[in-house]
Image (cartoon, rainbow, N blue to C red; front, side, top):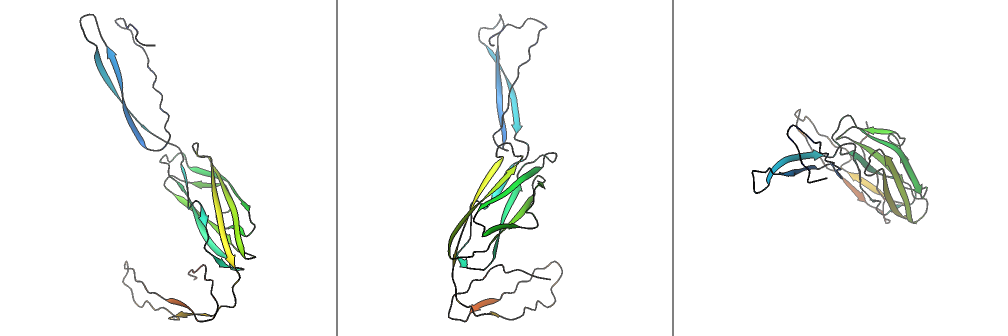
Length: 212
């Protein structure tokens, strides 16, 4: 309790509490006013205070996750990224639970579909959510992510998708092959190709990826 007298040779311990709500660096000054019998006005002593938030910090993106309109029966994959924004290497982010509820048309697929997942500070993992609509219409689900982040122990990710019945699709790829030729080491070369719908019905194209 202040004010209080402090005799010659005495000391007192003052406790300052710091409760960060995020990882940002914080600063301030503790002002200590003191006065003795020879001074007519109090003097002030400034004690600089600095600190920052520590521990694991989760970020889940995108949130929410939305699929564009797709064709019934076509499997479409999208990624959800879980990042650890923390800075302390001794405190990794540990994802202890991944629960996908709602429509069975959504599913988590390997490799990162089974917790626990341990994520070092500044690192991230990718979750793959597959949407395979069985009937036309809208579908909804929710992904629950539990972790050891003390400020956000549970993250909820709404997931939506829509599907339509499409007739037989006829498409072609031009050119049929891509030849990069000789590319200097360390240089990136780019070539493009076109997917053309040459039929009468709309086409649903998904999961364009490279294979060995």
